[in-house]
Length: 235
Image (cartoon, rainbow, N blue to C red):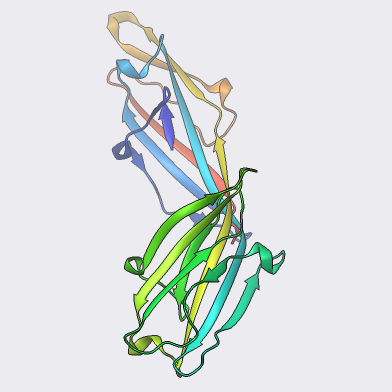
């Protein structure tokens, strides 16, 4: 996001090129800001441009899977953890071990308590469940500030859900860390010149980054800015 004098820039003034991936796994995201500077952009004769990046890094992925069939009465449970123990992962409750075509599956998934809260996803035979099968339930809040998220899965069993007479239902919890980074402010000041032309002077000393460019034009004034953000996405 880009802010002009503390106000978020309009989407129509921003162009977002496709992110570029380098050999070391880093992604470079760019925002190009192109807008016409007007008097309301200047507060007490100065305009401030700031670029803000919000990056969500998934640092833990844990799942519980149950295997049900049309002939067994006891489901098989499997746990997958990126790190930590089984108790750190989500838990599946409800349902039964045997289903037939036309039966209703109605089960809940509850994440282990965490902060920030975990994001839950349901999968049926490795395919993410359709949105109409899902229902978000009220989270569980703990006195220590931790939160457990809950997600309900409900659907009617069809022939396609059984693979060799078995159906796998998996709930995955993702723990993410959200980081917010802002560039140093690029400031411009407005001053009256002869013949009442509008002149914009950028305070280039405030921004050492080479990705911020300096422009000076006369009325009308157009500001063009290229902002580069380098981030690593961890799965």
